[in-house]
Length: 426
Picture 1 (tube, rainbow, N blue to C red):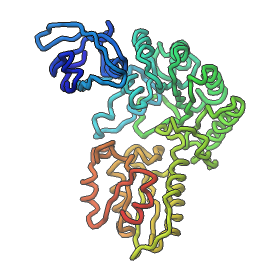
Picture 2 (cartoon, rainbow, N blue to C red):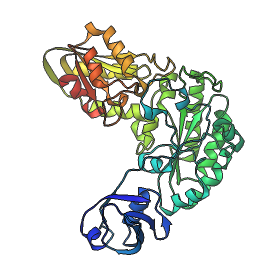
Picture 3 (cartoon, rainbow, N blue to C red):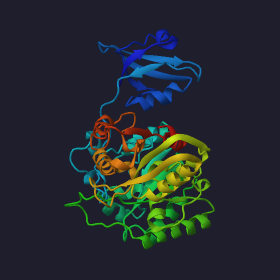
Picture 4 (cartoon, helix red, strand yellow):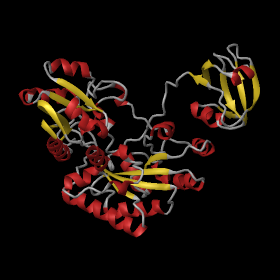
């Protein structure tokens, strides 16, 4: 059911659709969420089962051009589909206390996968929901596969129904639904021969299985009572990269996409930006570093500052060398600029968590206070905060951080294109 909170425009008036009305069904199918409306609103003809505030019902046959819209706005759904798995590497299970409430929600919602690129497991999707995905053409989807070995997938995900993944993916790809996949690699379980088996099974469904992201587990210090798994070694990182290279050469396409973390921690050279195509898996930490380097360098130009400016650029431990290299190059372009990378150790989650996006406000503030006399201005990456809101993972706000660093200018960098500008003007 979709409750209408706004109904403006000619079509709504024509069909006498009002604020407070509820859409119960489209073409005889139950109206479950806004995806139904988005799909049918793009069609030239369809039927709506409508109920008014007194529950009087009527069916309306809509006739319009494809570029016309009913221009309806609906009450936002409060519930999302949650996950019932017990994945041995689940990051939500490794959260400490005192973080943003939304971070403790285990979402496994195919609606969020389609609309936002969130990864889903499909273990929480019924046969009817799978049919709905196909009927509404929800493409592309992002699916956490991990392995195509059914028994091993059940073990890794702690769900006895997880072994149906092959059947589910074949049904989706047969209907020409594009799927981006990921495999979170647990050393000794789904790497090596098992990863190769998974990649070959998935590539058999190419191009509708568009790619396979190969990413390491994220392990925090909050693992008491959880499955005993370990981080990958540098040698294992090299092995993952080599296997991906071998299979991509055989497939003739860059189908396997190893995470940046494997290259950084193994000391291997990053792939060039053209390796990643349209960067469909960049939110998975894949190609992010290469893209950032290339776009940052494009923004460099010669200039001279009126006086010496010392800028500390916040970064996680894993990206330190990359950011420090870019700072040194920026210093060569801008006279009187003295920028440097400030690597922040993740005390909140533990030293094993090294990416910038998982830094807390408290850890950033502590690092800046310890280096207070070394900088005039600090630049903080926007991915350390909630989108559209200046609040860090630990609920510290940007305003609170600034109050701890009185006398220092704090600038938030939102993209690679603004990196150099923020260094010299921020």
